[in-house]
Length: 217
Image (cartoon, rainbow, N blue to C red; front, side, top):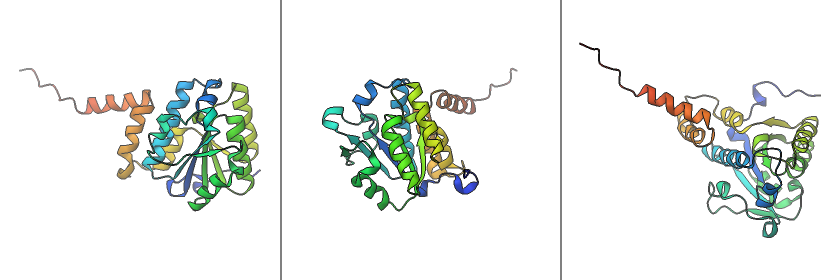
């Protein structure tokens, strides 16, 4: 096995391209590996983080006239962007998607979608086998059961796919808090979508801006 390590193995926004797959009502209706609210929240956070860092993001659905439209929490991040609708279950077998990804010229392929064991695992395993550096965002994905999600993750790891969560990815893209062109916007995403971390940040700002009490005299 070739281990993924070293500085060059970390994800960089200038080398990343994100594909969000089948975040649709039909899939969400039978999502049992995660709280559905959490998956919608995390998917929106991932989309917003990609926008902060200028990472090209491809939105794709499968048979949308029956499965429903991609969640507005995602599409609202990219108003007016074309959604690639497929009939193929495996996104990476659809040249409409693959050609758009290749046109970016980037090789760090980031995937998230519903369901993990089907619509994420298939393209992840195929793309990894074709030489792409593939990362799956596990908490912006979900499956029909906890077992299905966990087995899919294990299967993809064995195939050489990297696993991360959305906050880990955002931190890896940011890398240095002195990068002011993205730090402020990323903090806004954390405030909106990271619950405890966002509230703690706001509390910290409150304390830093609280006037020091005048000494009694």
